[in-house]
Length: 327
Image (cartoon, rainbow, N blue to C red; front, side, top):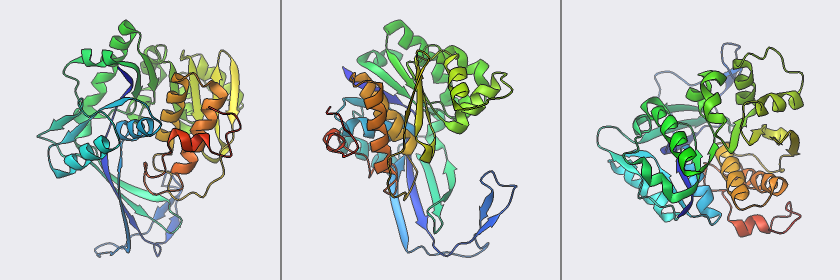
């Protein structure tokens, strides 16, 4: 029996670092600026980092480091890159028996260009991630919890199957919906959220979800959390970058400040927070302590390049100066 089965994506991530690239402010960009890359030139990077990403990969690695028994459900290519992903998960102690190898599609690939302030622009190929299937849904009965992260393309069809099966087998779900699910709005997601034990969102996602449900205006964070609770999840967690995170359960709000740390790369911070919190709740550590543990782990992750190098083991979190209570 597993503590968790994680369902989602797995990718090979490559980071190219360039300290001499300039930024240009422009309202046409969502971020408010463009990274200026010379067109038609070859740019040699003196710093290249190789890592892995994807919701299933990040969450399962996080839970395995914390000591959990975890299996990953993801779809990777049959080529060498897929073999690297497979081996990396196995080396972390993640059960890989539920991973599928796709002969028709390449393993998902992400290439990031980092500027001098370590903000990144990414080029993404979803690849095999778009074609995840679970041939025998009954395999999911081997777990107490499911961590369900972003699903793209045809893989999105799995969401209904996973929720229906979990409801029949009393398996709890921690749900971290991706952009494809959130873009379909509150009406589409409401049936799933009502079956969710832990809903995990960032602040922008939380606002978009509430507004998609017909709410016209939110006065403050407290009002936002109460609107989110109406959607029906038992616990709703909203991360907010340097402003920490906030949670609502049974109409009671909890907040946790961000743990101070040098920020080198924010890739994987959300996955580490969500997976740590879900695992801690599954171990009955309580809401406050679980929030603190998640904040400690995510603050460590952003201090390293990539989504896994900074992930902590449970004993490391126990020894953290930020954790006042023993676990």
